[in-house]
Length: 575
Image 1 (cartoon, rainbow, N blue to C red):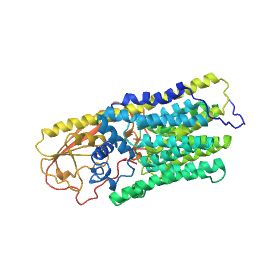
Image 2: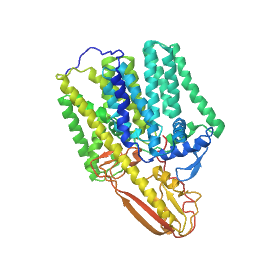
Image 3: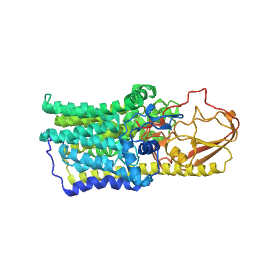
Image 4: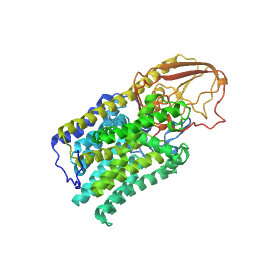
């Protein structure tokens, strides 16, 4: 294959009904197998807030939740605006709170994100369906699409905003610009990261027109929407949620050197854009493939040697098996493609869209690496579509010696990525099911227990325990009595074992997961929702270790943590 020297400038491609149908049906087909997924990770907090909104729609964050070990009003620790919670409240109020109903409702933002990718890719590349498939067939998209959190709404509004803004700029249509500005405001109402659309769209406009233009005035719309939300919050709660964001950034981030943050971020980026990594392997020539394989082998050997000698800073302190170390190297190598794809696209095309995609990718990457409280796949989700589009644009610039063979290889790489993504989502769903089953079982045990029963931990475990009438343990206010019982899971957030002198009896139980893919496991280094669990977005090959649950029966009265700092770190909540 060869690279032509001429710059590729695709115009808006006509779209057939079949292409629109594929863009709609593909995300639905990928997500429908998980329509009965139990409440998982931060879904529990979203549902609790949504149920409160159905009763108090103008006081959306006035409810108190025990999410970090102590009960506190949501507005004191929540770091995101309320749009996703309001949407969830509407679904629950209209159709009920069954898991499948809520997940059906969240197919909408996934489909809108796919349509937004297709609309944008039609203007930026010749094969928009490759960009759509490369976006949807990633673990970041599929797993995030099976949650009830804000991430898919944020992605949908980002894509609709950028696609509409480019449409408006290139056709001089003010209606498209107004719609794009409205979507930018809705993105910021979904998650404050959406604010980056304002400088991103402004920068694209200045590069496109080579001077300031009246079109920039439309960006006052999202600015006004953000201001309204902040003023409303301040009037009701006496504080701005931006203060909570600042607390997350300044207080909750682990103390790590710059190189370690970059290593972990590249690893998560490679796993998040798994489809792009597979397409990149197809596009590489023979020398690049040998070089890439050599680098992966060298990094794997170095990681194994350091790990065997007790040097584990590069793996965030975790003692990882060999297969996890190998995939750590593979994901890091895949993540560095953001450098090659962006620089190559800018060098070959030098158009405003190249700079837009580059700023979009690097802005998201830097945010996930250096601003969020921990690196996680959810924070990297917004860079998946631009990476997919960059990969499709790269294909446009290559003349293949055997086009049919190249197309088959690209299709095979997308199928492989889809299978891996489905496997990751299936493992995450299986874990969620074991948590729900455990909560149901312990709730039955609690009914026959003579004393009070409490639980520690959050996520889906909290949702199902509280649904069964079990109270959460509060590190500050819960006063234990002899004979009381506390249930908690080891693989959970904000769990603190009781001092030994408070325990009359401790029982433990292990629950098998039976999957060879893990999303959250300190033993395998998988930290899909937070790198505090490990430096890989997900782990492959090794069997996921079983979850361990503990039941402590109390021996004496008191508040075991009354004189201690109540929290042990934040859970990966609503970031």
